[in-house]
Image 1 (tube, helix red, strand yellow):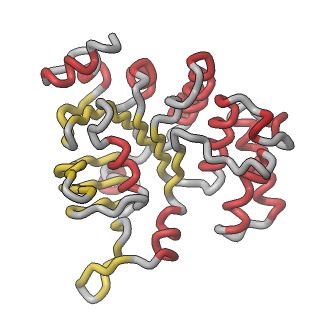
Image 2 (spheres, one colour):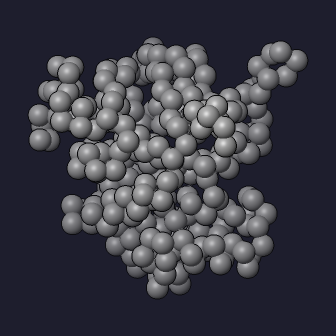
Length: 259
């Protein structure tokens, strides 16, 4: 691998703007994420962090700027020197590189754990049932739930359901994982098991962007911490700098509530 290849970001966001009617939620976000990097995004409610995450996966279309994942501009293609909006099939193809875990688990209640995990690999990506099942069982072992393959979501705790949701997102073999406050819907005693799974993924070199209020996770697992407020990136750097020695008054005020 050459130096130029090593230095190429997996995610590039430039001057990203997003509005809902007259409310401007993102006001020009710039961010690069390198392969294997774990970036944790902190900020108060309404700061735009979850919206930015949804824009990376084109669950929300941006109004200005661009986002690239693995060299492809998300939501668009260049044709005859002009940008064209991608079809729904084209967007679905781009999303194959991106796994996402939401606040709510979004598991299908009528399917077993195993069925939830193999549905997209078989139905969307055309994998054989045998290959998808073998991979799903490896993933369940990876998140510590191999004995729950035949269970239904209602038979699992919230923490177990979220770990299944992580396995389901990993089943498409993404290059990038997005986590949108994955522990916010959990009882406090269940948060640790989900964060432990995410720490293991970080150690294994998976590229991750995590929106969370879990300061301890950010301090331990992040390569970089981004603090957002009012639709802007206010401060960004290593965890020991942003969390341990924040420079911006808004970052200081936010962290004072947790530390």
